[in-house]
Length: 406
Image (cartoon, rainbow, N blue to C red; front, side, top):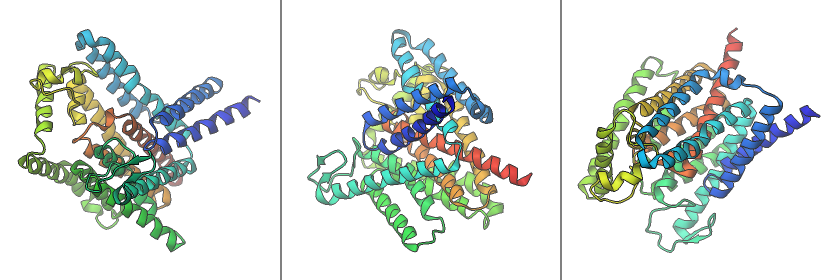
């Protein structure tokens, strides 16, 4: 009886995560409901069958994650009268994601489940692409039931603004492309997947979001480099490092300067200067987690109440340089480990999906220089879900490759 209950809870967690993935672009309330079901069923399963092997197998990842949260917690010493708000940000806004990450890594230890999750992402992305198309040409966005009469405005799809849509597409387009790169027996399947990817890329262009296009470029470069590794083996790491440490940042800087010259970036530059002023005052531990909007007007000379429009500046301003460095180390570890797996194992659908997941994360983080996706309810869930699937798949494929080598 106990084993049946555990099995039921395990399946419930799996399908609840599918629900979270599917509703990320569609419904905030449904994300919360399915995430709550997943966490409650997971905790009940762990009470009945304590097993912490997924943490032991990924101890470096969870150690870096712990450091990230410790340094964010230390920022509360500087939050002053906003201590309660900072505590809420630590425990609720950020605190729910380590548990969600553990749920995903522990539950999706089977590659079949990860492929299913990627397929759910694909299905949800198709609906987003279709509703953007419907909005663009018919003035109606059917997922939220909204009429947008002017086709000249930037596409927003089911999101609140075009930047959020662009961030979503930047992350999911590489995952869709990973399916299309596989050698499907039926050419119609491959063509359909390429058409879906084309529709989503057009949707990204219709957002008129330069950060989204830069992020998409970063993801596509990742796919090109990894899938052509056998041809550029000796030059792979120099090309990889030059792309992400020089080429992509240079294009981003060019876009920022170009847009500023046209008068389109004055507000973001003001916010960046305000964030830097906040950083200079408390560079080590920050001003206090979750307090940027409260201090925004003070440090920008009454500009208003806004986010920093740059995830990295906001993390640094709120919780200090050590939080930012631990987050960068966390992501660097995930990428390094996953890339080694991608380059080591034979080509398969799983390897292409892992490449797509990594590329989606890479694009997301590149776009994060221009916006605050990690502070958005929908897009923060997208990030942590894709991160969890990436870690779960790379761990599984790495262990399988190790067994084959042995």
